[in-house]
Image 1 (cartoon, rainbow, N blue to C red):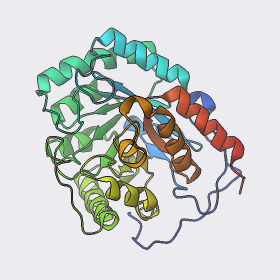
Image 2: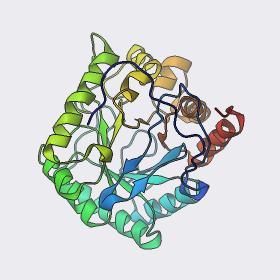
Image 3: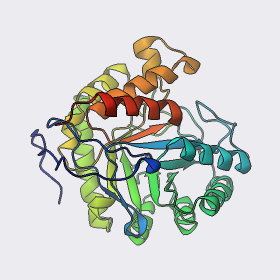
Length: 318
């Protein structure tokens, strides 16, 4: 069952427990009593358990011609597979594969084209790394079904099943891991004029409402992690409020998943162009990890893994 909304911090975990090995991209340390997220276990398709200790880096593999950061570099499936293998070797705990850009103002991709881009990459990675955890970033039920049949473990859906309600049926049937992300509007118009009364409380209500909807449809709650959707219908003030208010989302009892790699927040806060944002991304990931955020979706696995090793080395044990 979902936990209440009260802003109480969750109890401190058993600090004697160690979890996944470093080879999984998840490193074992203990936690502060007031960390944001002491419950981090995530059940994936087939009952596979992901329990990072405490960090898991998700490596981004964009099989697209138009993603904001690296569009076109990995549109060839061979390049995408090679890139994914490299990210795993650098310390990624999982890969997130996307064949349709969800950057601001992106145009939608037909389902058949999305599947054609995606499936050779899923097959190539699954063939070379059978143990790898594969997430697929899609809005579409048909693409999700094809990916899960092909061996994907997780569906990362930026629309919370709003873009394609049939996705609910696929989730209920396969019971994969699922990233429940908040967005205000579709990629084509989400950044035109985002507005909220209280962005943190509105996202919290969104999570509560959609957790209940997903569970009612047949997806167990332990399959779901929560992503506040940095850059998806938020301006600078919204983003800052969200990052300062992550404790409110953790009160729901599900792990938090944050993707801020190279995003426009670094231009808005620091004045950085896209090619200048790698170091700022590492710093932001380290700051969030020190607060107990377990799941970090990033482009630069090697650099962020170094930052998280520093968090591990410099964080006082509880």
